[in-house]
Length: 264
Image 1: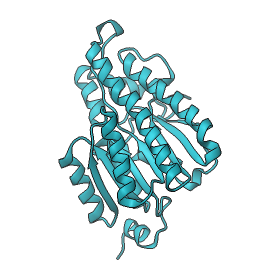
Image 2 (image 1 turned 45 degrees about the horizontal axis):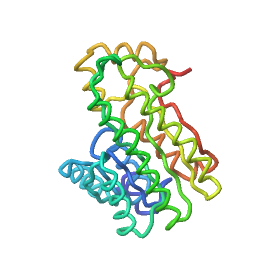
Image 3 (image 1 turned 30 degrees about the horizontal axis):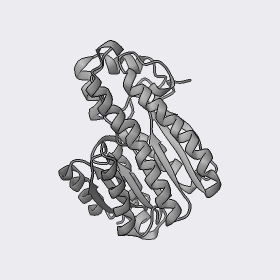
Image 4 (image 1 turned 90 degrees about the vertical axis):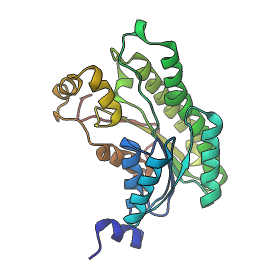
């Protein structure tokens, strides 16, 4: 008996059928969940991250379930490395249709005066500049190959408001929102849609780092969330998949909260 995943892949009925997709930060958390989901929905997925062992593991899992995936090891704090990853994706598959810029890092929870400059620089190199570099290369790749396509950037609900203890992180994500909106305006006429998702508290290794510093952080967040819980990475990936699919064909320039109602 076929599973739902096998049925989608064998019959090209998924909402991302025949799309060539790239996912950054794809070795764990939201990125890994997205890569698996995109493959289930029919995409050929290239996973990009720094750690080869975990990338290989996710790719093997996708292939074992009937999906199509490969990986590229890249340092998302290095512009040349990001650009090579996107170029390699096009060389392997002939085009690029969609991209999910998910890669991001966290730094210790600290008030502004205690944030270390080295931490600030690294965070912005990955979470802001890294997405800017990736978007530039992805847009050019889409224009040169598929002609039209879609990009989704991973932001955060913290980008919408002051976020005590996470000033640098939230500021970088707010910058991503601005990049997203501007790119949507600039490249909409060419047929490229650009959106972002803004997850609320999600059970990833990043939140685990913050929990180690502030054990009550999840309980506090849940108390302010109408659904009274944190998200699973798969739930966040679902929003990204929809925005990248043709089902969202008239949606661009949006920063979509995926936060259990936290902004309501």
